[in-house]
Length: 558
Image 1: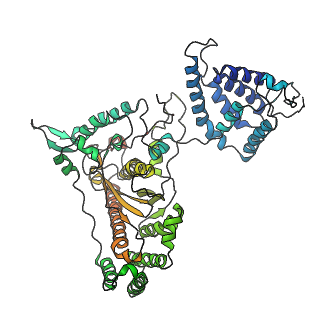
Image 2 (image 1 turned 135 degrees about the vertical axis):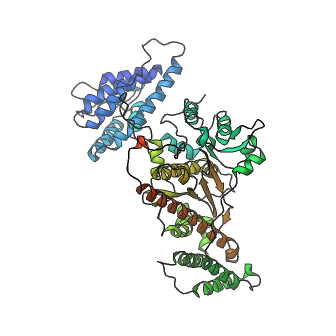
Image 3 (image 1 turned 30 degrees about the vertical axis):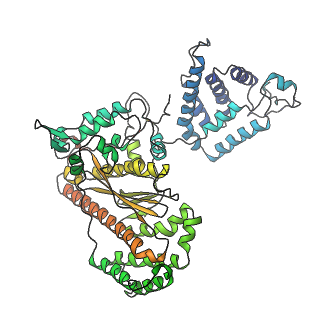
């Protein structure tokens, strides 16, 4: 046997215990406990962060309550293994936040284990020429699969289960979810609910009551669990009459574009009207559109921002059609190609009313997934959960008014990513934005009835705008616009690109209206005398329930 004095080596007692427990495959939790005890002493001075992490793991109750193995021991061992993995994820954040020196030492510990890797059974040990190194304390070292898996798992970064689940799939509801939703529903006041009609006895029929009766029967997540209703969703016909749906889907009117904007589009359309066979004369279409759009000269960005944006966007797309850039992106491009060359043009439409950003942490969702963090006097403060990072966020004054997601794949609307993002992930973020913005206006009912949140979903060369509002009661409505496509040919610029640009401009006007309503409401609040929260009049306020939040625990399935 080769010897070594490396302090990273695992003692012989731990090595033997690991082999014994692996052989029985019943007490994986004891392996972790032994490993924790050893590493606490080995790394207590060299890596202080490890001591805290491992002591937390060691204090968890992972044992079976004894060494006796009954008929259910295999099942218990499996459940304990899941508990160990959950504990590792909960403490992974502490490891990641360690200083650079500690991270290097962690890698060295793994490298030394791999360098000293040996057989995992007595028979293979006798047939091998290499044996574990011996430390001064008569310890030997080896790298078993369990050891490397445990150490590697501790380096994983903790993530919010809710942030992941709602973006990847419609997940099965964890235990206790319906109880939490029932409590939220129980706190709703009938006087503030949305009465959509009266029954035969003359009693009010509330939308929130109908939604709760339906969502309580569903075991997989749906936007109904977040008290969001989409009138166009076929599921609505299962529990609402056509008359009730018509009342709910009374959509707000889209803002009208200014005449100066209409004039630009009309001029461009007139320039290509007399071109024969535009499909085979794309070069002529490009040239005439270029002359028409440049005939307006330069626009004053300070006073004519939208006109300048329309002009710059048309010119940029004309260049892409002139050099077949868009065709190449649609065939070979990545998602980032779509973002940088196509969708970023629409981001710039919002620059004068906020800060459009991509891949930024959503503060509204961060507040929601951590809303239960507090000092209870019964336990330590919960670990902070991570938020989502949408592909698009519009922020002004620290308040988020618009969100968006994009994707390269275009499977005609049946791709899983698109279905989940449009049907679950984005609506929940939109409601997060709504609740957060409403809180900035002190949850006034008058403000809630006028506030609207916008989403822009981009998949492949398709774009759709969504609007979420709450005209009455506690529920939120979700409306979707028609879907628009980036044309593959310059001959379709007027027929396809222009309507897309007009829809984005209308979405911007919706955001602008919400910003003005928030400002007006805040000015009204500022004009009143300051006071204490507990003494404020609650009759004029409404607490919109937040989106459904999963607990930060792995969900067990049958």
